[in-house]
Amino acid sequence: MTGPKGNVFIVLYTVYHHVYKLAVEVEKGLLASGVKTQMFQVQETLPSSILTKINAAPKLDLPVIQPEQLTEADGYLFGFPTRFGMVPSQVKGLLDGTGALWAKNKLHGKFAGTFFSTGSSHGGQEVTAMSMMPYFAHHGIRYVPFGYSSPHLGNSTEILGGSPWGAGTIAGSDGSRQPHPFELEMARMQGEEFGNLIQTQVAGKQALLDQSKL
Image (cartoon, rainbow, N blue to C red; front, side, top):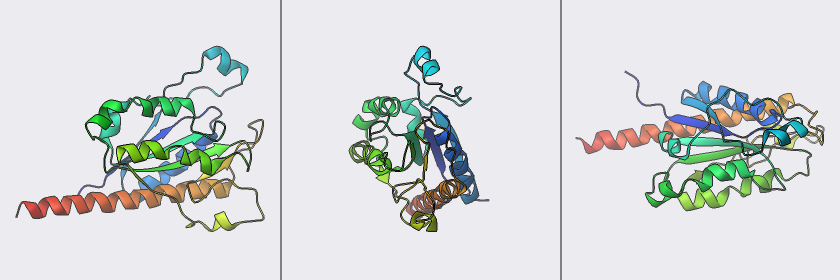
C-alpha cells in the first residue's frame, strides 16, 4: 500500500493561452513527480465586448476555482500574465476573496510557486511574481522559488522568459510569439521539482502522525 502523494492545484489566468501552454508542461512535471494535480482557471471579469476587441482566445474548458477550494490542496502553482508589473485583477479577485480562510488560518503552511508571461523581456516577470508575496505572507503560505536549476536561465544566445521566480514566456507585443521549447522545458522542470517537494512534505507529516499514534 502506497502512502499519500500530495495534491497540487494549478491555478491560472490566461487571455491568449501562452500561460496555459506553460501550465500544460507544469502539469506534466507534477504528474512525473507522482502527486495528484488539477488545473483551474480564475473567474473572468472582463466583459465579452472587451475580450472580443482585444482578440482574446476562447475561454478554456477548465473549472473556475472558488476560494474555499484552496483548502483542498497541499500546494499551488499560480500562472498569470503581467498587468503593469503586477498580478492581474482576476487573480487578485480570487485571493481577495480568501478573507474567511485567513481568519481561520486555513491556508497556513501550504506551499505555492508562480509562473508567468509578459509581452517583452522587459515586461516585469520578476516583479509580477513579487506582487503575489503579500498574499502568501499574510496566509503563511510558503513560497517556493524556481532558482537557477535550469541551465536555460543562463542562456544569453536566445531571448527567453523565466527567472529564479518561476518559469515564464514572452508573448510579444501582439501576442504572436509562442512559448520557446526551452521555456516549456523550464515549466516542466518547475512542476516536477515542486511536486517532489510536496511529496516530501506530505510524507513527513504522515510519518509524524504515525509516530504520534505509537
